[in-house]
Image (cartoon, rainbow, N blue to C red; front, side):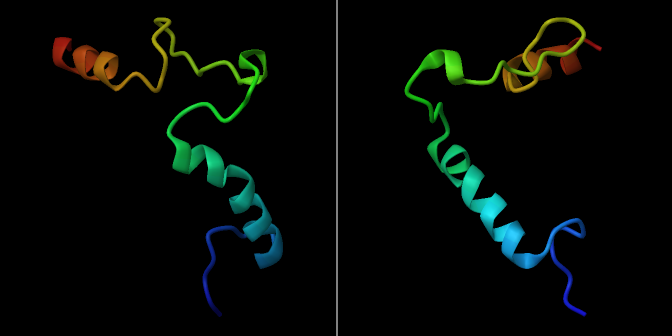
Length: 63
C-alpha cells in the first residue's frame, strides 16, 4: 500500500487541503486584502512570535 502524508483523509481531500494553503506557502506574506482578516500570530510564553527566527536564535544563545 502506498503511503500518503495523511491517514485522516482520502487522496482527493488531501489535494483540496493542499490547494487551500498553497497561496500562503508560496507567497511568503499575507494573502488577505484586509489586514483584520489575517489570523493572529502564535506567541510563546514570553510574548515572542513563534515565527520570529531571530528572537528564537537569541533566546537559544542566551541559555
